[in-house]
Figure 1 (cartoon, rainbow, N blue to C red):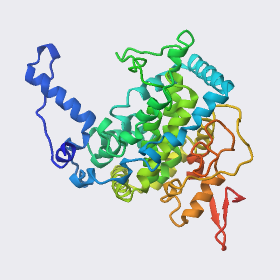
Figure 2 (figure 1 turned 90 degrees about the vertical axis):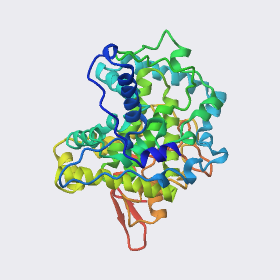
Figure 3 (figure 1 turned 180 degrees about the vertical axis):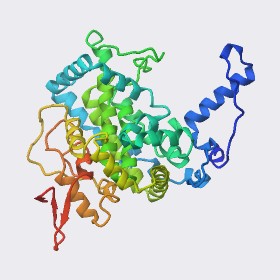
Figure 4 (figure 1 turned 120 degrees about the horizontal axis):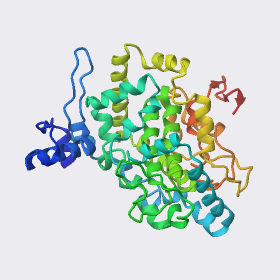
Length: 425
């Protein structure tokens, strides 16, 4: 396998001459192009900068690229269509929601601040490489620069092989891409439906953010990707979990700011991304690989910090340097699960937690059972009845608030019952 053979070796390409492209030889130009592609799609093959006393980065071997049952969704048909098939009912039976869907994206797109637009543009540029650096602000003001330096020095090969190699990211894949779901729903994008109401927020980067090849709108692939990656990072870095999952959800909001997706698209993308992350995490071979990536990040940061990650995160939080406080992360994650839509289904239905969800909390609550972790998710879930809430037996990904679940304060009684955030669960 090409990826495996490349990753198991150290590839060092000659440095291209630092001259304008027009003045460089064809060989130098080709070398530069290959290096750019290597950096974008195979960053784990780049040689790492070594430091005395620092951890020695170790890329995965070939066996880490094959044999994952989670390459196929756990849902029927091997996709995540069933997770978001409630969109059919909204289109067929709730025209008022579809109207509000458009009105909401127009409002958010038209009124976004210049700073929010700039962040949305930056989020749009990381879909095919450099995603980890783009989302590194989730680590906070102290840790984020260290993460970016580690990336620049090619010192996170396992993490990048799994989560930050563009289309070759091993923990992503076709089943988790939303390509099939988009084809099935075939819903046009807001800037196509209402071109006179959507502001095109292009910049001087040379990239047209609205040249999307005619791809359909629902669910959002960018949101799906962002949520998948940040949820898996949260699973292995529980100290930063609320901030990481909030960052992934914020990336979904960025798509609404740009006017390339509706709110329902990004709610759906968050649902499929979370479901795909849970499938990956419940694949024990993939969990082992992700755990190694988490250990790689932790070791790198603790070497640079000179103290345990938990202490550094606590100090960063105390200094006001976190991406969001835990409470703010939980609040915004909840808001981005509904985008202000009214309820359209029964509002008194207890949440059914999807079977794959509870183990996402295993590193946050290692002493709890699966049932107890499910109780934490249920106790922190959104109310029932909002658009895309699946009230059937498979459970509702729309209602799950991972930021709230990760930041929950949990006490266990002698009989095994839980008190979550001061309330009996």
